[in-house]
Length: 395
Image (cartoon, rainbow, N blue to C red):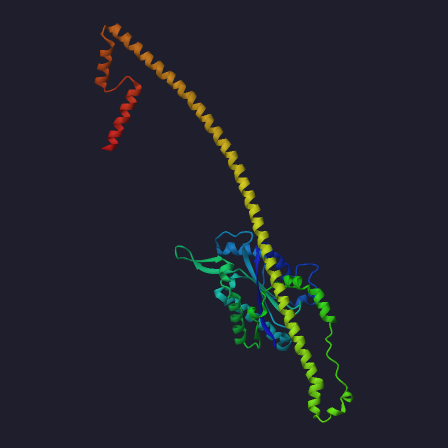
């Protein structure tokens, strides 16, 4: 029985163009030996990207007014791969194969209300193993801001929220494809397989893919030799022929097959455990590298800011020191002017009194200040005016 297979891979910005090179077959020499260049012309797009995935993403951000800070290790796209085994596609034929991938595309357009505009590209490969669809999309979540307004934000964590998010994906995908008339079984549960989804590259690396293929192609399964009917002892001839065949031929083979199955199951579980460990190690290594890169970038930014503000601090300090020095010089000059003015006024009053024989200077000054409501002492006059303004303000 064939299985409905869907896999998802989360991608940061620095990884999406590598996927673009592979999906669009832009490499001159393919490192993937499974690609048959003589069949590449059979590949086709359900939705074709005009530019590289990075440029398409930047264009998407601009056109859709997506807000929020995207870090270097942020998940900006997801790649889904839809497929089954070669036997399934051979059975349904070319036209149904095309319809199958069109239904996969429609499924993702509607899954979690994603929307077709958030799909960047979708290409079907017919030149690499069993037919499969690569579908690139931006993990958009429809949410509300603090004011209650509808917004779209890029958040793979929320799009794939919950430990059972992939189980829900598998269930929804299987139900959709089954409802469209395709005779497939649901993929095995992660609890049964004990492993997570790997990229093709990671799977080949973990399993030593090329070497494994060679070993499998050369492997021969030796079943126990069938005993010659003439070797059956005469004292057993009393048994019925069918019983003898069952006991001497069929049962040994059945026992061996069961034993091989147990060994195979045990090896499969062990391989799954090892694959899981390697997958987790690679995942955390990538996260660690991304965090270290971010820390280094932030450290450089902090150092640049420190240098910039140190220079600004020096400039500001120099400007203020120059200004203070200038004001002190100006203040000293004004003090001299005021002192000279006071001295001149005093001499002038004495001269007036003598000239016109007015009498005592103090009486003349007091009469002048009383009649004009003003003080010849400039500092005293300023203090009086400020006090009067305070009184006016309090009223």
